[in-house]
Image (cartoon, rainbow, N blue to C red; front, side):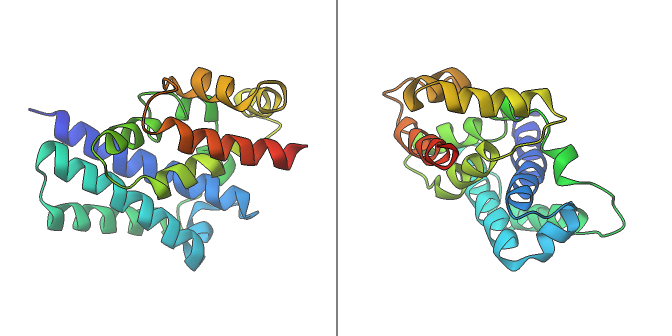
Length: 183
C-alpha cells in the first residue's frame, strides 16, 4: 500500500516547503534557506511537521523515529543555501494550497477529527493568507476575496470545510485576523 508514503511526502515535503515559504514571505525573507535559518521560522516549520507526523503515525502506524529522521532530512534539504528556491515561487497558488485535500487543510482536518494538535498547521494557514504576491494571480484573488467575503463564507469556499467541522472555527479565526489586518 503506497498511500502512507504518498501522504508522508505530501504532508512533510509539500507542507514543510509551503510552510517555510509563507512564514518566510510574512517575515520579508526571500530565500527558503534563509527563512529556515531564522530560528522562529524554523521552530514554526518544525512544529507544523511534528503535527503532520503525529497524524501519519496515528493513521498509518508509521514509526515515530523514522518520521523524525525523514523530517530532519527534508529540513536539511530546504536549508541548503545552494538551492535557489524563493518564498515567492514556492508560495504561488495559495488558493489551491489552502483547498480541502491539499497540504494544509487535508492534514489539519484529519488531525482535528482525531483530536490531535493543529495549532501550527493553522498558523501556517494564517501565514498563507498573508501571502501577497502581485505576480501570482491566485495570490491577487486571495487578497481580493479576503476583502470581499465574510470570514465564514471565505473559510467554507476556500477550504471546503463544513462549518460544523472541528477545524472550521480555528481557520475562520485566522481568516478574521487577516481580514482585520486588511481593513
